[in-house]
Length: 258
Image 1 (cartoon, rainbow, N blue to C red):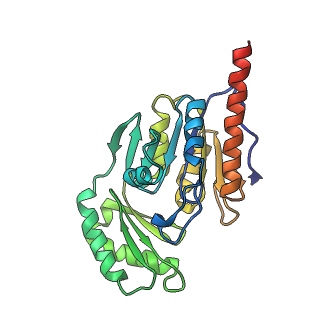
Image 2: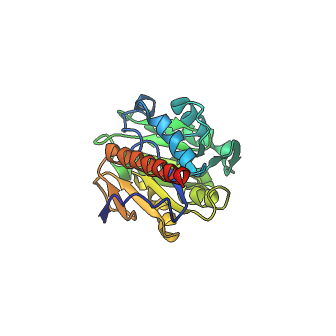
Image 3: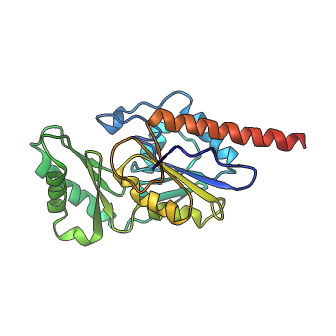
């Protein structure tokens, strides 16, 4: 795998940028509510969106409501709950045929996890996240508890393992599918896609990007990945994005001088 790719050429090609949030733009925290948004991050994202003609979307495991509470009303396109909900040009579309079952699954899981230290059941708009910490649970044990909580509803959901988390998602949700939905619509259609993520939950997105000959970038040095490039940490990924804005601004200056 290569280090971060060269900054894309804005003179010859059009690009679309997809960004995971936690672990990619934000340092991870023990609890999702405890993450810190660095000063200047939101303005960087808005500048990137404008530089790309609007072709920037956040692809997150958080719900759209959680993203808005975290970042404010940015006006950015986004996929929430791993693609169970999409916001494109201000319009929200959901792919969540199992919503009525989410509270029931969450309740079953909460009962099983109640006595486990540092375990937490996070109920999202269209999905459930089971957070755990070793050594109280290992990944296999956490997945087994999630499977037990699904009981007779397993056909309506899928399990996706991440960093100390098992996501219980609607069967038709996924980051790869979300990226594909964006790339079928303006202003993303026909552009070369770039996706930056940090977790096992982003691997479907990397594979979709690779299928379209785009740039797939994994943040962090750990774990096997389908991504073709790697950023060492959140700071390196953010610095690359900052350089991307600079390249776009340079292009605009040259166009004005012509």
